[in-house]
Each structure stands twice: as structure tokens, then as C-alpha cells.
Image (cartoon, rainbow, N blue to C red; front, top):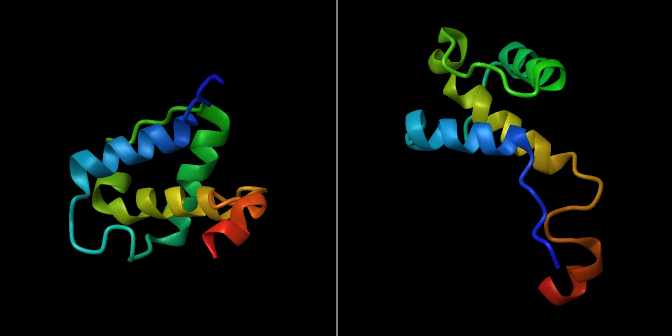
Length: 88
């Protein structure tokens, strides 16, 4: 079958993290919640916001936090319900 396309939010955020965020604990530490909400709203309205803004460069953890939130809020987790028993 055809490969599903990677959502823009994940593509943009992971590319940004690879360029700017290769620091210890990048996916462990949380960003400032107001920055995460702002970034989420920009993706919702603009689909491809400018991640080079100072607010995001100064709080790179808000970008990695948005990635984690995306996976957390999927209706069916990455390790799908259907395959859970095989994983366990």
C-alpha cells in the first residue's frame, strides 16, 4: 500500500529539532506552555509557521513538546491498540 504522508507539524518540528535542538534531554524537558499553545495555534491556522522566530529559537523545548503532544493525542496510538498484545 501507499505510505501515509507525514503531517506537516511533525515534519517541521522534527527538522527544527534536528537543526537547533540537539541538546541533552530535548524530548524530556517541556517548553513554556504559552509558547506551545502559540505554536499549536500557528500550525492550526497557518499550517507552516516560521519556526525561526526568536520565541521558538529561545524555547526549543516548546517545539519538541508540540511533537510529543501530537503523538499523545492521536486517536489510535503509534503502538496501535490492534497490535498491543503483540507488543506486550
